[in-house]
Length: 121
Image (cartoon, rainbow, N blue to C red; front, top):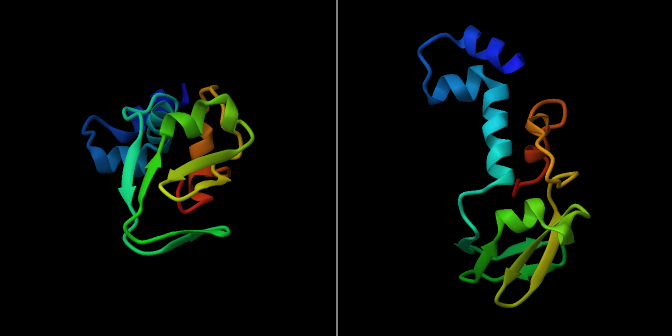
């Protein structure tokens, strides 16, 4: 019901800016669907500068592999941690407050805003 009311209030002309700024529940719903079923198995990123996460330094030019599926759904990370595997270290740090398979778009809305609590969220 909330989502339908939000859609009616936004009007017929839907574009990205309308969805992003005037339809927070729809945007959160899509974000939650992507958290649960990400379109990519893993992401590879190269560190452009030395990066320190807790007590581990990731040197510039190291390749970092991130797995949205692993961080959001796997049993091993239900204790609120994301694991980064680099060529030189394995790093754990907190991500969502409660990773789970339950569909909950409100994790992306105020007051929770779980995706904004960490620079990597």
